[in-house]
Image (cartoon, rainbow, N blue to C red):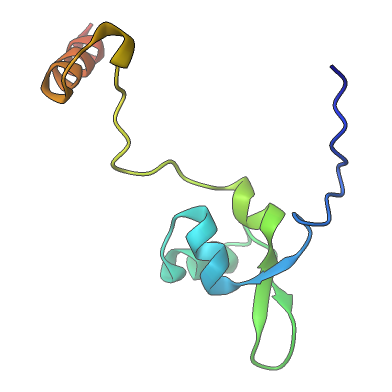
Length: 92
């Protein structure tokens, strides 16, 4: 099946507030501001006080949730068993 999604998707190119951008990246607003200072994110100045970033920019550096746990439902493992399996895999 061919890829029909355009590189210039209008939804991704919309400008969102810094707060919404931080939520999309799953980071705090302070972390987002640090990334701006380091030059990792391009900020758009909408007015003297309003700033924002594109959704594409916000979603590009998105973090995985910190509470994400590898889980094997097909094996029928409980959470405790899954955590033990993860520790076993880390040590091997």
